[in-house]
Image 1 (cartoon, rainbow, N blue to C red):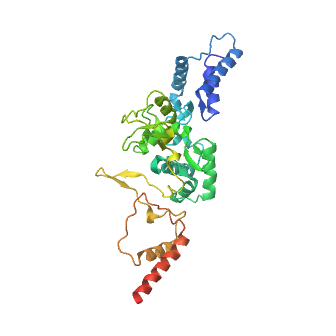
Image 2: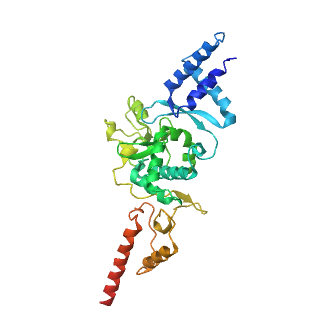
Length: 343
């Protein structure tokens, strides 16, 4: 027998068939579910309401039913459009367990590596170039090739986990921000910026151009705020008349070629200070080298050198990616040193 509870069941089926839907689409789906249930059982006294408080009560009832499944019907404002978006997310505190059912462990590890480069992007760009995203395959201890990684990246975009711009840069999507926000805040606390107006995370927006001012705003929050106030809410300095003259946050904050270096997350030491994670041999290799290759590399590196300098994490660590190109350069350098000593 059809009952009023079937409205929730139909609504959840519609939500599960979609990755992300707007507030208006969610309301339309709710209304259609009520109509379908009433058509099956006209004796039911259930009515659709477009009032916000009734919608909030409906969402609360849905989440109460989903608590035992570690699921939540969560909402977040889209950073570009300002629209309220909803998605079914995994509320279990297990980092990125949300992707475990769709992707293999190596693909999840690759996704985490790309997300790390996005979060650590310079100039608050929160995006990564296609080249650097493909290079992250080298940091994984797997046999995934760059051709396979390109297919996986396309899958991340197709399923709404990443966005790809016309410039070919990858950034975090609304779905990723909805589902992985606890993971991002716990893993990158110093890199998660908050909007000074709505207090949600900011990966696309504007920043106050006053030096040392920490104000960051979404585009839609900035537009609403500037309609009634032209001063920064943090430092009270006058903002430029044209919002385009403000400092951008997101992809517009970086030019092509500025993020070619791979960045590594800081880790806390026992004495409370922060130090950069070091990469093995300052290079990342796609496969495990043989013993002969490793010995020859050590010999060529040790000749003509004293103490090895520590390379800062913000330098271009991927400048010489191919070993076959680097080995002849080292050999030529050694020959030059020997010739100079002979003379």
